[in-house]
Length: 332
Image 1 (tube, rainbow, N blue to C red):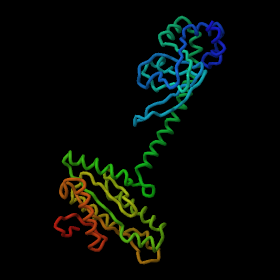
Image 2: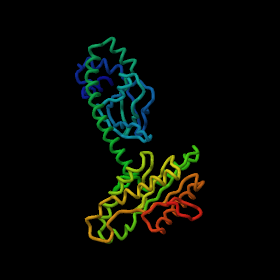
Image 3: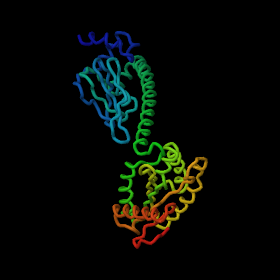
Image 4: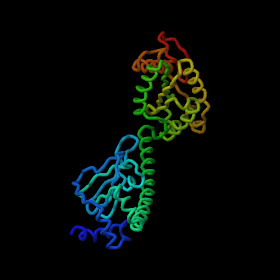
């Protein structure tokens, strides 16, 4: 008889380990045996359900969805374990997705049968629930710690993917995507947007005279100055080497020019090179500024205007900011 054959297995299941043989038989009579092939989904996160499952043999993987919609594995459970209990305790949608990793044999118990058994056999049910709640509580603590670690890791991975390691500013990959998105948003909303390109003066010569370590010190020293001038909603990115591009949201040409003028003055106050022996003793930058819709109607043209303004700043002697002007006049 299958009930008798199952009893040795049932005794090894922790939530049933306090039950006598007779109590085990009564509980076993409520359960259905289910055979599930490998790689079959038992239920999805968010689905309605009221079944508890006990694994007699095989393996079941449990996963949850990340905010990005990706499946995040959190556990694999094997023979002697149970899952799906939260749908019975809380009568809530499934909190995770469960699928078989191997051909598996399970016992299933419906919530209706469980509570019916509780009414008729409260002492037996209380023994089961005590064990079950203890194990579930421990699982939730472990899962919470795991998910917290995964979220932290995930956030750190995302941060690394979009930021420059040396400066902490956004990197070029993020900048390329942000330029398209923010420009389209500005055009759709009819709001101004300014692009700024900053090129540190004589940086190649600085590296030759003092070495890359000194160059890196200059790069890291200018970042706090950038942050002190521009706002939280402005996007500051390291374009490459000693070049930076800023997206100034909701800022027209006059305001962008004023901010960049303040930037050139602040940069010259840095003392990072004063103690070094060489011809370059202070930090300065050439800056080009162009604005939408004042100077260009599309993103490609706006970038070209920014490049021309930067070129003019260098042409006119560096250590200055130039606002794009189609006539070729200086507007520093």
